[in-house]
Image (cartoon, rainbow, N blue to C red):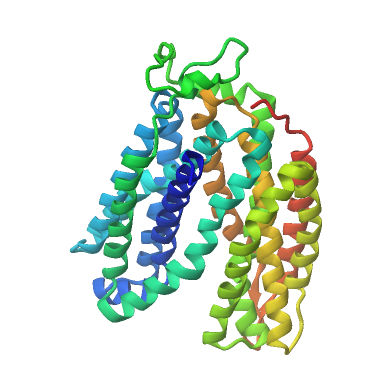
Length: 412
């Protein structure tokens, strides 16, 4: 295994731990509400506090993250994230749990942006989509392996156990990152032509002088039409993807007839397929072009969104085919999409941009759930109505995303 492969393995492990920590809290809701004697609305704040902190953390990192060696930033953020995750397991009160989740989110949310920035810095654009596809499988792996394992561990050992296990895994990977991740200072010293010279990655490179103002990153991003387009692309793509996700499981249960245990098959099968196929989307994007693969995958995504939100069948098998197709093509198009986004900014500003982009991502997630909640209603028979309207909204946003993507220019 060469240095590049080891680095990608560590970055995938970082993503895996971060995603498990973010996702595991939701299926633990019943146990946590019983433990602290809280209402569902109070538990919702446990989830919201993490997302809110992640947004704040990403915005704050815009001002400073490009001033540091990427290795140092990764170790600092990952270590604080690990401490926060462990602290969640020992929270004695509801207020303490809110505080520990907020602390964890401050650092965990920024980790995702930093991982993408490192990939953009280290991997040449010609091979970046393949690397991106490999690292992004961490999300699917967490869904297939991490979350079910966490639920089982919680059932056997208590709600605190998944946080302890996740923190232990994270600590192991922090140690591995300390030994395996090299200094990553290439973004600190631009080459004469504005690109990053190979020698700039060496440990002995002197960083450039600090920016005159901490607000410079914001000015650079918002004054650049290419970067503004990338942020708009992020927003529309997320609205075209996550709007339908909150009601997939309820729709399959209430309208199609899935039993409670059968719902897990949606995520198990869909997750397994994306783990296997996501790297292939990256290879295709590197070979045939990122925009071409994104567009083709998006067209298939439009069809799968329509089929899913208009599904009327008694066949569990057919329903699983439809849901799995959505997971594959909707996740697959994110590989070339994310690669294109990392390419709109030069390395010296990439960390700041990806942090702001992550904040837009978080905002889009919140907006997606809000929009879906406004549209979907409960019918007199207990089924869900107007889910197809959510699908049409997602289709429109996906089409807008295609046109927005065509405006992006790769600069690095």
